[in-house]
Amino acid sequence: MSKDGQMWGGRFQGSLDALFAEFQKSLPVDHVLAFADLRVNRAWSTALAKVGVFTAAELAAVHAAIDDLEAHWRRTGIPVGDPAEDVHSLVERELVARCGDLGKRIHTGRSRNDQVATDLRLFLRERAAALRAAIAGLCAELVAKAAAHHDAPIPGYTHLQRAQPITIGHWALAHCEALGRDRERIADAAARMDSSPLGSGALAGTVLGVDRDALARDLGFGRGPSRNSLDATAQRDHLCELAFACAMAQTHLSRLAEDTIFFATQEARFVVFGDEVSTGSSLMPQKRNPDAMELVRGKCARAHGALLALLGSLKGLPLAYNRDLQTDKESLLPTLAETEACLQVATLAIRHMRFDLARCAAEAERGYLNATDLADLLVAAGVPFRDAHGVVGAAVNRAVDLGVELQDLPADEKRRLLPQLRVDLRQELAAGAVLARRDVVGGTAPARVRAEVEHWQTQLAAWSREGSN
Ligand code: ARG
Image 1 (tube, protein in one colour):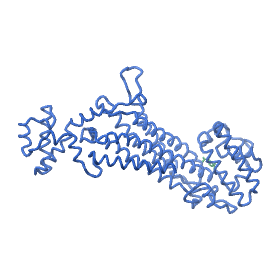
Image 2: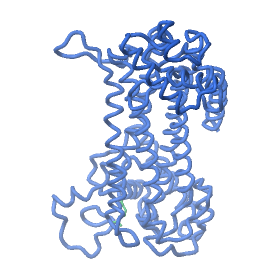
Image 3: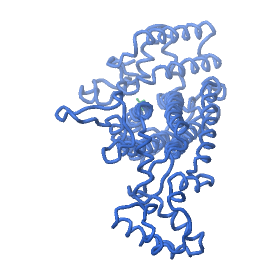
Image 4: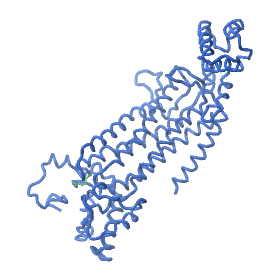
């Protein structure tokens, strides 16, 4: 190490300007890679021993130093404020402090460029698993709501105008579908980063015939060693993919949040959020605000920002490593943590959100949500759909004028406006009947939703088996 403790001081006489020294540090961000870095050091020193850099006894001493450092940090935490430039310098310095000259040999044939690329993949593998578990947790809460309310009607909206009734279960499982795809996207991203950059050196590969296959196996990379050292040290598309998966998941969360914030308005009153996830106003004593979901909705913007920051930092960047790449962690790591937190808080909010079933059911009977079904009844009576659409439009206008629902049109109005119909409108246009007609794959009929709840329960069980593997 140089007089200022860097790994690279050989040709430098002066010191870094203090302002720049602080500016270029990555330890405040990359300290989270410390345990991954220790794992990489363990594997790398083993590989070096195989090519004669360490004897068996020396390797044992190096491994003992790594174990000791790991135990120490598990006790004390990582010294985030340490003057070391980055986590790799910190680890090397601490190993040298523990095993002397042996520690100075550990960077043989290695660069921080392949080291950080490897550390990151190990770390991201873990974070991806945690995100997938958090998504499963939220889906479990939504599936519980769907199971409890698979046949409970609620108004469905398009353009935020009442459209057709749906079941609460159908609504809850719609959000599960999107989250399920997010979970899959995260798995895809994790699979694509499942190769080992270690042994790529600074850019051109390593020396001494280090066995990269064994290294990849040792570190649990299923796809073996990366195939091109320039690519492995310079590219960060796997980070972008994960950032996109987070941005997309948070976008889905923001829509779930918005749905429920609307449900909780005095105008809708479909749900009430429990005290666990609501806040009041410092001024207005009557307020009960859905802040948990508002924060989830709001934080989504930062996930979008992280993705753009990453993509922007890569645009036009020459191969191979450039220091710009250090900012990858500043962009990605906070968004991983925040996405996980948003998933957990959304899970909590859904758990503590209670549907007012009577009100949902009553509102599903109001606002002409059954107008399409009235047109369909006319179609069944032989009227072409386009004509039926016009007839029902006129009937809705008349019902609005009279201040009644379609099923409550007076008998004379019904005879005048809908002469083709002989059916009992109260029965045929009831929300239950409207729902039951959507008995199609993907439809909102309670029988279909019940089957989908079972599908999701099986899915959740499979996910939890995957998770515990
Ligand atoms: N702290 C750096 C990073 O996170 C380490 C990588 C190598 N640094 C270097 N100057 N070559 O990207």
